Image 1 (cartoon, rainbow, N blue to C red):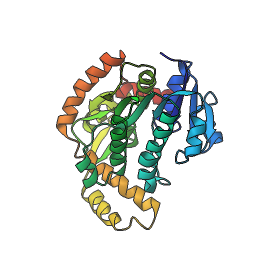
Image 2 (cartoon, one colour; image 1 turned 60 degrees about the horizontal axis):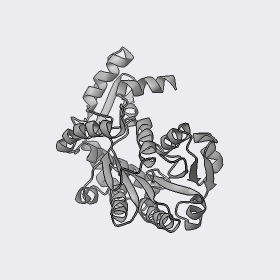
Image 3 (cartoon, rainbow, N blue to C red; image 1 turned 90 degrees about the vertical axis):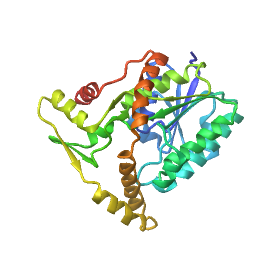
Image 4 (cartoon, helix red, strand yellow; image 1 turned 90 degrees about the horizontal axis):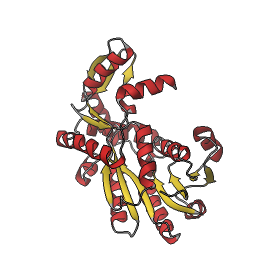
Length: 307
């Protein structure tokens, strides 16, 4: 294990902030590249070294790489203000940053990617982020980095976002089984992975729990001590909305973002059952690789109640 400085790209994001937290708790020096250092300090605290700049700027990346021995990439452009720049940020800027890391002599890279997505599926459903991350994985495969790719499934946050009072309302009903991960678990696994040198050129699918939305409603009922009803919302309206917004993408980033969300919902309901079945073995492998006990949905709910 190394105590040399780790650069986190995407360190203020959904997973990135948890990666920062885990490394800081381990006493590892961390650098975070951020467009707004003051806001980042409010989000993740003052412990990291903040370099203010943009990942799309090679100069910013070079400044952030000073004194760094390893890089974790958890970059996401899935937000209303950046969604139109997914390829530019998640692919082109990330690859450019990796080129600068190579030039700076960095050897260790951990990349947070998608759980498992095929190129034809990403193209058919217009999942720009999936295509971008596949290109970064190809770049890493052809590089000399000691790299590890962590394939992240949907965040366990998805269950809480669809919980409305006493109803878990799910467009399409969702798949019967879905691999998920608690954000804090992803942060811990990434932090452990970057501190190891024995995971070179490995792609590891990260799984916490595999469960469907109906089962999640039952779990919520037991945890909160009140009936939580599972409600399947017909996909007809999201499908119509996805089709209609497809012709309006050039008008605004907000429409583009909504269209992308609708595409994600459609893809979610098409999640392959064979991959969900494989995910149960992935969980066993993950626990063996990291001597790790994942967070259950009930534990995540308790953690959120405690703040």
